Image (cartoon, rainbow, N blue to C red; front, top):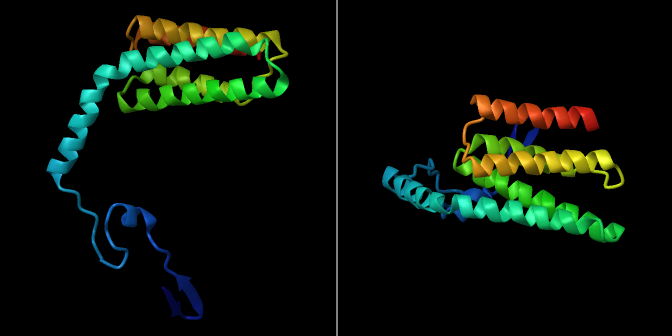
Length: 167
């Protein structure tokens, strides 16, 4: 759809999100979602939270296993392995965001971002990587959620010391 106002042409694009939601772009709908539908969706999410610990443990194990295999891989295979670790860390970040595990969110985001610039030829980067895994395992084993407790602050400080010292 195209309209002209004072020599300015405006192109109205199709709203693909509304289309996916089943609302016609020209319907004029305001986008109201009934509260019972929202509550039902939230209940589904809440029920899945029981699976959170097993899912996060599995992802950390995948990171650990992939990391162990990196040294014996060729350059292209190493890049793929680091990309896998990036994706595992990102999956943890998404889960932790959904279920408000702020401390693990902090560490998984940090690890994911670190994967962007990791140099496997630098021993220091191996130390930083290991520090990430260590704090993630402690966070998991101790079932820490908040990133504002004294224990959380200490873990964040330990990781930051490793990053500062070995960067």
